[in-house]
Length: 188
Image (cartoon, rainbow, N blue to C red; front, side):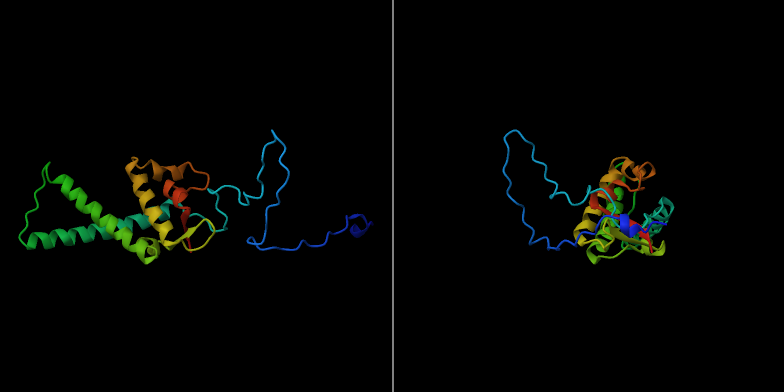
């Protein structure tokens, strides 16, 4: 039996750790015609990669959360319509009023989502489906990331839903708004 210590290379002493603020790029002599390879600048691989161990929520959980959020928005729209009707307004359904009704429902959807973005919390549907929103580092997303997610989610819907269907072919089952905002829902 041969002990591994006798054939193993000697262990190098640990390098002195410096904080990123203290590290300095050394100025090296630049040879004309030689490419500049800046390895020190790209510490992380690409920005579209998840760095944490949290699993991405399956599309069924996302659909359940969206269905509950959608039902809450429909209930709010119905309450608004009932109050409008009881106050003496008339609800006519014809070709001229459909755009107004669609705009009212879209305003309720955007208002509902903006409230949750500004509050910095998960929607009621996500809580009911036991999902939480995290960024690619596994941290709670900032307000700016949540607003990016809302704007890119609207873009995903306006593109005929292709941004949402993207999750069916994506390697990590992420939608367009997951990639753009660098956030994703995960079970807790």
